Length: 421
Image (cartoon, rainbow, N blue to C red; front, side):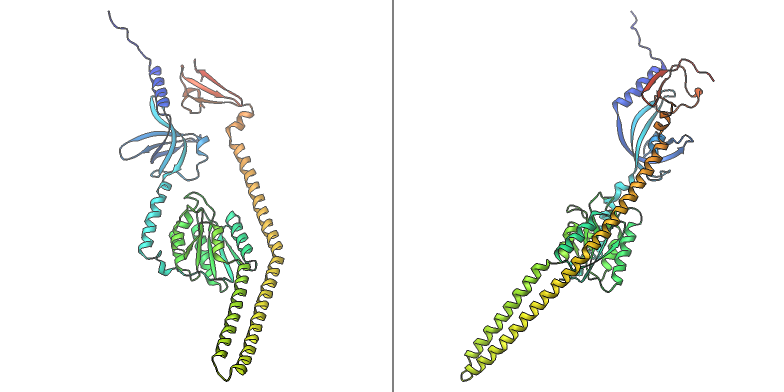
C-alpha cells in the first residue's frame, strides 16, 4: 500500500518557514556593514547587512528609523536589533530591523587603551612631572557644565570649607561633538589669567560615551601643558579617564576634588593659634635657660630677656588676633555675597529648566504630528502585510494573502479573497 504523502502548497511552505524563523531565532542583535542602502519614498529603509563571508537582506520601517541619531550609509559598520523573518509572497528571507546603533562606539575601549599606551610612552603620566597643589589657593578655576550636579557639589563643598575662597566658573559642554575642544580651550584660557592658582576639571558620572570628551587627546595634552596644577574630577569613583592619568591629582568625585583643593578655615585658624602659642612658649623657655647659664648677669639679663620675650609674646598675640579678625571679616563679606550668588544661580537653573521644558513640549508636538497613531485617531486605518510592509496599492497583494488592518483602537486580521484595480 502506497504511503500517504503530505503535500504543502507554496504558501503553506513559506508560512511554515516564516514561523520557524520567527519562533526559532526570535529577536537578535546582529553586527555587520551596510550595503546597497535604499531609502524608499514611503520612509522605509531597505539594505543589505554583510560581513566577510555572508549577507542578509534587511528592512527597517519608518516608525523605527525616525529615531536613529546618526546617518547610516554604505560601508558603515552597525549593530541592529531585528526579527528574522520571511516575506511569504516571494519567499525572501530577511531581517526586520527595529533598532540600529553605530558599531564604531564598540571600539571606544580599544581607542582608550591605545591612547593611554601612547601617552604613557611619552611620559605624560610620570609622577615627576606632576605639580603639587597649593596649600591655600586664592582663586580656583572650575571647568565643567554650568547646569550639571558637579558644579553645585564643587561650589557647595568649597564655600563650606573656606567661605571666602575665590571661584571662577569656565562653563563648557562636557559631552557630545566639540565638547573636548571646548574643555581644552577653557583650560588654556584659565592659564592666561594671573589670578588662578588651581583648576578643577570634571563632570558627573555616566557611560563611557558620556565621559568620552575627557578621553580625547586634545584634553590630555592641554592638561599636560598647563602651568597651573589641575585636579581631574570625572564621574564616580569607579570611572577612570585619560584626563585622570595626566592630571596632577585625580579625585574620585567632583565633591572630593573640592575637599582636596582647600583646607577647612576653622581648622586652619586653630592651627595658627596653636603654632603661635608654641612659638611664644619656646622663646620664653630658651631665654630663661640662657639667663641661668650666665653668672653675674643672671638678674639683669634675665629681666631684659623676660621683657623681650613678653614683648614678642604680645606681638604674636596681637598678630594672631589681627589675623583672626581679618579672616572673620572676610568670611562675613563672603557670607553677605552668598545669597546674591545663590539667587543668580537659581535664576539661571530655572531658566535652563524652563527652556528644556519648552523644547520637550515642542518635540512632543512634532512627534504627535508625525505619529501614524495620530492619523488613525482621525478615522483612517493602516493596512500591512504579515511581513510589516504597508499596503498602498491593491496590486501589491495576492488572493489568499493575510493582511493586518490597524485602527485607532484594535487590529483586524483578514485574508484577501480578490482584488479590484
